[in-house]
Image (cartoon, rainbow, N blue to C red):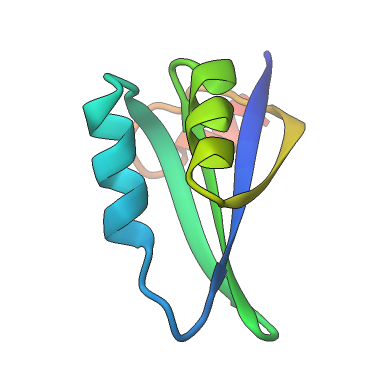
Length: 87
């Protein structure tokens, strides 16, 4: 299935991950998945949430540089070979 993923660009010297999670909690937005990677001079936080539009609005209101992309999501059984079976 195709779903929307949010990307937030965070400065490497500024730990805003706590702020992100607190903002989402305050607005009753649930994180379904996330990843955090260091890329050059910034951290890139990618996440899938239950209300993408609301999350983007909250991030913009709080000065976060954000983007959105469509990604493909699949459910994989949590056992060795689970992904191999799906593929």
